[in-house]
Length: 244
Image (cartoon, rainbow, N blue to C red; front, side, top):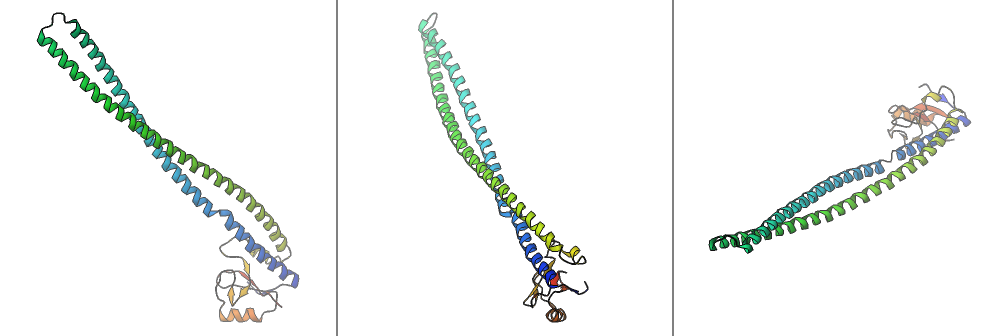
């Protein structure tokens, strides 16, 4: 850009714009809420993991309960068979001693089998109860994670609204500051971009990008009258020569 000289009021307006733009960039960065977003993603992943674990535990509980029910049905069938065999044994009609002995052995075998099934049924019921307790714990964790996520999302929404209001106020003040500047300068002043559009020099460096001015540029800046606008050779920012 060609060298531009601002009067005192315009220089003050540009300085104000620089300060306001810095504040707006800060608010815009805060509005991203990167830490809250990262935490929300972590909570969502944790909730998904807990849901998968809960589904697996629920399936395990259901399977144990099904196995216990099958044991109950098998044991009931054997009990009924034992009852019929006992009736036949007690009646003794047409039975030889060998027949009676065979029926007694059959009943004893069925009873041993019922005992084994009852033991397995108890094991399945206990395993089902263990899975149910674990499931309740995992669901409680999932509910807590979901509650934390809802609270954090509410905080994020409230913070977004607050920052949006502050950014809107800063935009209005930036517009008012630009209105006091020459029309040739106004198009270059955007609050967005990788680097600030306007800055000053501190310690021989552009305060927009931090690059040191070359020897010639540093001399030009140092020898320029207050209110003079130069350009950073690295980032292209308008450099205001401030001071008396």
